[in-house]
Length: 151
Image (cartoon, rainbow, N blue to C red; front, side):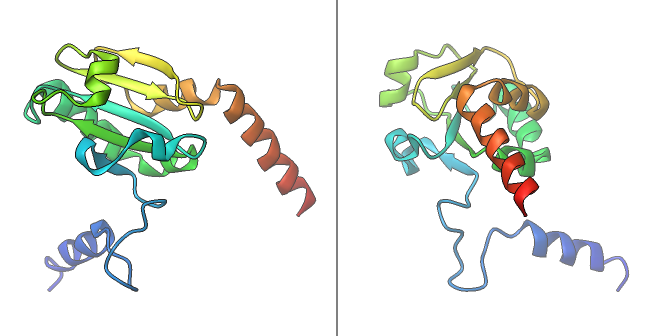
């Protein structure tokens, strides 16, 4: 029984289901595939991190996804959504716009403009640092501090 308990707990906490209807609201979800979303739906609400690869078996893609899944709380605290696109054919609108070659990570700010483009994986700490330098994020941090001081 003791050997089974860690697996049961891991499955329980890893499950993205909510108790109400079995689904996580889109506002709470962190990972999406390109065919599930329209980038416009996140404008002024979320900071998309788009991870491109020509295959979901690409070693850089696998490493990037591992790094992002290790620290989801830090991403969610910064209003990040991770969007993956591992199918180069047919070209998605975002692939046409950003023109990735093989692997690419793109950080888009809440205004909808590209803030960071990297041809190699970044860990959450590096992504967080880039986000924390953005003007809207700076304002969010000040507002969070003001709310904490009030209450």
